[in-house]
Image (cartoon, rainbow, N blue to C red; front, side, top):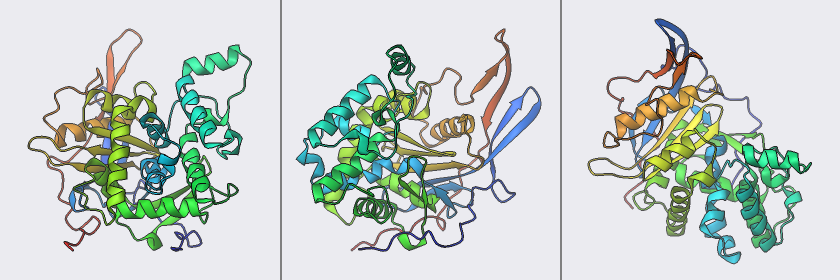
Amino acid sequence: MPPAARSDRRPPRSGTLPDEGTPIIARVERGAIIEAVHRGIVAVVRPDGTPFAGIGDVRQPATIRSSAKPLFALPVITSGAADAVDLDERELALLTASHAGTAEVVQILGALADRAGIDPGLLVCGPRTPDDPAESARLVRAEATPTTLHHECSGAHLAALLLSRHHGWPDDGYSDPDHPAQVAARDALRLVARGDVESWHTAVDDCALPTYAIPLASIAAAYGALADPVAARLEDPASTAALARIRAAMLRHPELVDGRAGTVDTEVPRMVSGIIAKHGAEGTQCLALAAAPGHEAAGVAITIADGDHTERATKAVTLALLERLRPDITELPYPDGVEPLMHAPDGRLIGRVRAVLPEALLPAATSGPSAPSEA
C-alpha cells in the first residue's frame, strides 16, 4: 500500500499566508480609498502538466479542500463501482459537488444510496441545514430536521462508501486517511496532480474527509488534466476515460456541482461553455478551461491568502483571469462585469473589488510540476 501523506511533521508555512512575499491580487476600492487588499497566488498549467503562467510562487502549498472532489471520484469509475450501481450522469456530478442541498439533490442521492444498499446515516459528514432557501423553508414548515444528504459534501462521502462496498472494504473508518477508500482517492489525486505524496501534508476537512496541502501548481495540473483528459497523457488509460466522464457530468450539470445563485461554480459554467469551476473553501478556486480556437486548454488554481470568506476577491480574480486567458469570451455571467460592485441603498456606485493582475501573466516555466516523459 502506498505511504500515507505525512501528518506527523511540523505544519507547512503556506505560501498563501498574507506576508510581503505574497503578491496583492485584488483590492477593495471605496471611492478614491483603497480600503483593503487581498494577497494570493495563481497557477496556470497545461493538460500535460507543463506550466503555462503564474502569479506569485506557485510551488507554495495550498490546501485543496473541496476542489479535490472531482478527482476523488476517479476510483469510483475505474474500479467498476460506478457501473455496478448504474451510476448516471447527474449522480456522478453530485459525487464531485459541494451542493446546495436542494430537494432534487436529496432525491437523487437518496435513490443512489437505496440502490447501493447504503444507509445515509453512515455518512460521517452528519446532517447540515441546506443552503437552498426553498428546501430550508420546507424543512421548517414540516418541522423536519436536515439529513446527512442535505450536507454539501454528502456526494463525496457516498463516493467513498460506494467504493468501499464494491471492494468489500469496511464501512467503519471510511473517512480515515489510511482507509483503502482514501488511499485510492489520494492515489487518483497524485496521478492527475503529478505530485509526490510524500511531500504532501494531511489534515481533516470540515466534513471529516482528509484534505491535503500540495503545491498550487500541482492543483492546477490536476485541473489541466480535467480540462483535456486525452492531452493530459496520463499513465493509466482507464483514468483518462474516467476523467472524461467526470468532465462531461460537471459541464452538463453545474446546478448540481454547486447550485447556489451567484457563485463562480454555478454561474460561470452556465454562461460559458467548456469551463468547469470548483471552489475549495478558504480562498481556493479551480478552473478547467477547454481549448478554444487560438487558446490552449488549461487548468487554473487560485488561492487567496486571507480565506476570502465572502468570495469577493475570488470572483474578481477569476473573472479577470478569464478575460485575460480567454479573450474570445464575450459575455461573463455577472451584471457587474469583472469587478464586483458595491452600491449605496439609493443605488449609487460607492465602490468595487478590483483584480490586480500584472499586465502580462508571468511565465512559470520553473515553477510547476515536471512535464511527463515522452515514454
